[in-house]
Image 1: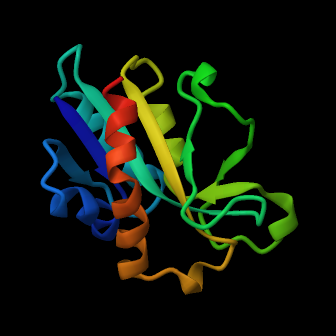
Image 2 (image 1 turned 120 degrees about the vertical axis):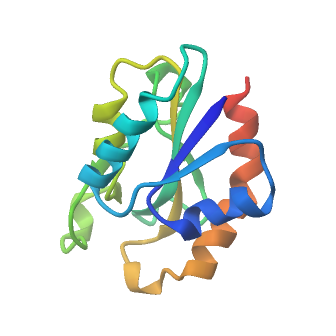
Length: 154
């Protein structure tokens, strides 16, 4: 069974619309909400089940809008090294970060002992969160949903 945790309904909507065979959980925004939702989900899982976090992220201009980032879990799956920073508020010093989101740390902390865990982030903006819309978020994830499913089923 596949459990997918999203911070926002707009992020999950693509997987709902595609009628993919996954269990969807909406955690709410923030690392603590993601941690709590992930821990509750882990109690439902069997040993062979898969848990996945999918969401949008802000990134420097070296990343393209819509680019799918397979976050290193385990590290050998990442082709290119980059730094993901979990933040609580909008980023002010944009030159300081490569990639930012608000939930990754909660997911990583909650799943640190789980072997079948995946995290995918899709670049939604270049540190301009006011430009991100619900429809834009849904489209970005919709365009990558099939690729995400292929990667976790390998």
